[in-house]
Image (cartoon, rainbow, N blue to C red):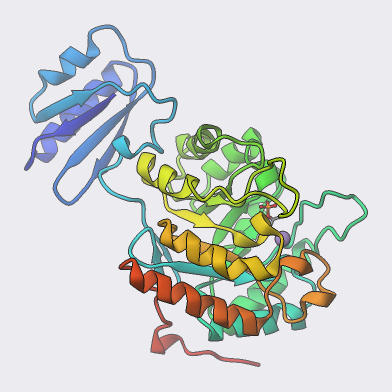
Length: 349
Ligand code: PEP
Ligand code: MN
């Protein structure tokens, strides 16, 4: 159930509604927009509550919600969720570019990539320290050492860091280094991990599971939000279909669909969805045309020698061309790729 308050409602009236919801044994979730205040009600609604709420002072409209997700639903929020990421605001007109290697391999590799992507317009540096590899014999990431190298690359480039956290036991450690936590596709429905992420105060990017429907994916976001962390962004990274010509099938229709039903920002990962570096630029452009709030791109100084996902990684030069392409589409659809602010000039060692 959602309660839309009258325009110009008084603070005491809002507090009165919140108190009444608690008395009914449920939880209020208040969202204040520029003009409207919306109070979402979480929990099983007792008989007659809807009518009782309609009679309360300050209430304009009460609507029952039958969707399985609530906090993630657009109905529950007075405006889009926005998250400040370095020089850009995710969820606004800004198109946010996150870029970097699949895996942190060495200081030289991550610093060189950070420097390259920063120079060509990235807002956030990505890089995995803990890697979910399909084979137990593949490189599993540098772990804590990878986190330390990411911190160094952040200090040098000024770019905030996004990195994956794979298990509840490492959430605290990863939080010490990351500006944004990444939940990988394989963990989209790892509910104990989602619960743990829900308790921290850090933005989180939730990748869609390769076998998840849109509803299951949003419900996973709801798991995080129901534990208190509202700074959730969703990432479409391709789903499993019969097609084998690409690594996964990028479900671009999910972008406007999810933006229609939730208030959460949506990122597209053209690297893991296609698996092919030469498809990345066009899928980035298509993503922005479809309304994506950002893109997550794998970049490596020498993709041929990459320890992971070299075939889908852009060189720094190709990344520069990709950002240019994104910029053109962003402008065509009334958005922008923010440039770096002069006060945060690059310092290289
Ligand atoms: C990654 O971002 O490097 C990654 C492992 O992605 P996904 O979880 O989408 O496979
Ligand atoms: Mn990867």
